[in-house]
Length: 220
Image (cartoon, rainbow, N blue to C red):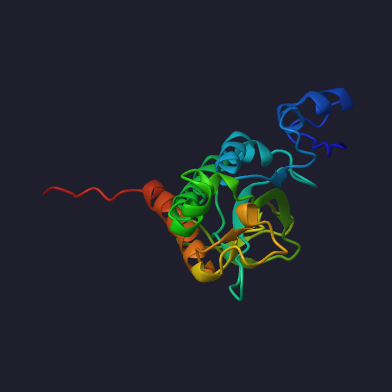
């Protein structure tokens, strides 16, 4: 297997050997990931995201990321779901993992799949994820941030991206197992696209709300 190597942008003098040995690239090799992403079940996806999500911010190109965002590629006619811009690697990882956990809980409740494959049926589904980046190329772009504020993002700003795709294909329960051109165990769910999108978004919201500053009552 060929491996993509990612340079640590906090270490301008990083040698090729140091790049090969750095924690991100070592983790990708140890987990047989040829790039910063893979196809896997949601439980493994959570583990990967929690391990390398924050780390990714210092390996983006062409510079270290200072903001993050998460994109969930919905199925059917739904537009992709996208978080507001996130200020810190820690919150980026927390929000991403919360969305994935909420999604996994929903997928696990699919009674038609449970009847076919047992209690661990959700672990057989194989969506995909990939870390990447986006760079703003125009000055004065106004964007929504995780705290609800609108801010101007300078040109050249690099955003660490997590993209989740290849989501389970929806099938009506009565037609489950009839789509012979797909592997039913790994690709088909009777959980519709709207509910999948909502579960991910609710997970994001819960993590964002938990991080929000709490107002303290004042006393006279």
